[in-house]
Image (cartoon, rainbow, N blue to C red; front, side, top):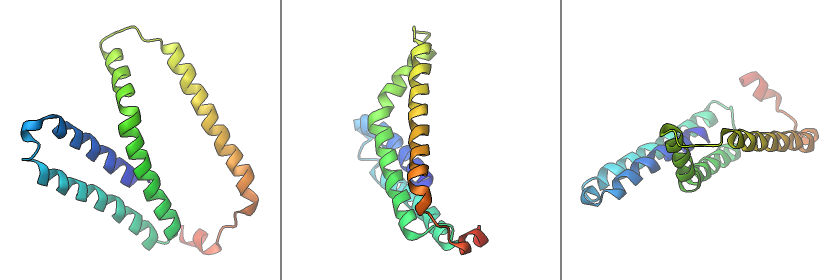
Length: 137
C-alpha cells in the first residue's frame, strides 16, 4: 500500500504540474508516461517481493495495491487543495485557528483508533496465524 500509494501520489503531483503548463504538455508526454511506468513498476515490485519472501499472501498484496491506488487518488483529488491552502495560510501568517485544527485532528484520531480497536475485537477470535509465517518472519 505504502510503496504504490506514495509512488502514485508523487507521480500525480508531477503530472499535474506539467498539465497546468500547456506549452510543454506534449513535449513531456513520453517523460510522464515513463515516470508513470516507473512508479507502477516500483509499487508492483515491492508487492511481489513481499509475496516472494512469504510475508504476505497474494490477496493481501492485491488489497494493499488497491488501497494504495485509492489512497493516492483520494490524497490528490480530495485533500490536496485544502492542505495547500492551510499550509499557505500558516506560511503567510494569516490568522488560522490552531485550536480548531487541533480539536478536529484529535477527533479524527480518536475515531480512527476506535475503529481499529473495534475491528480487533470483532475479528480477533477468527484470526489464526499460520505457524509457518511466524517462523519466516
